[in-house]
Length: 351
Image (cartoon, rainbow, N blue to C red; front, side, top):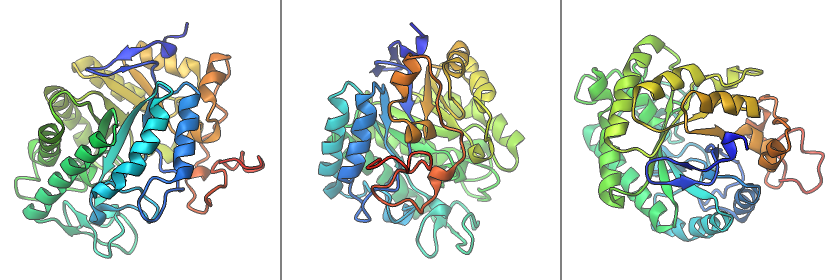
């Protein structure tokens, strides 16, 4: 049996195989913030096809951190029942569910978004620097959202520190120009992440699985960012993070490439006693074997599952992913009920 199909125990969580669906914004959520019936159908279809670990699309923890109108919310208790119903549908197939929690920071939808510093990441939407009080409210919002995910029956949560959303903005030097205790040194830039982890642990308990997603590179000043990563891995290990999922800031530019964040992730895994997952260009069993051979515990896939919900049975049969990483599935022009993958839209009734 290929090792990717074997069970894995991270810190406290055992997963039936080593394949995760990385967090994916599916563009079929309700603008009310609730998990929709169509989303639950998509989630369960993946679980029915032998998925080991399902990570939800990013759930905003505060309306000031909302990334898009159709993004799911977890900033109020009213969102718990719909999430709980969808979670049960996934779990009944033996698939673990992790809720990804996020604040979009400078990428959020308010007219004047919040960020570590006065920066502009979205055209025409300059962000302003957060006050210490606002930072404290965001930390509390992450903890409250984690408590709601736990109440909904999620097997764990993932703190989104990647893709230049708020926490990623704090830890990435080119986005953080603060001169107080949240800026400057790597310890200061990482402070908000430490505070979030501490608050989530206090809310959910020491044994509740907490994952982290982080960039393996930076759009500017990558050498400085790379030098900070070993420190961050040490801190994640100290907080007993269930697994660190490595992504990157430039995955849409990597068309045709495979395992494009593997080298840096493997080096970091070797140097730290911290379970790791890798997303980015994982398309074949050979790709997966190369990842696992470097000591990384799990592989994560996003776009391949948009094209083929039954990808895992196909992999078992010796096929590779049909996804060509064209990026068209990220078009916001997709309509509810319409297949996001342009290669699937000819299929009647596809979702």
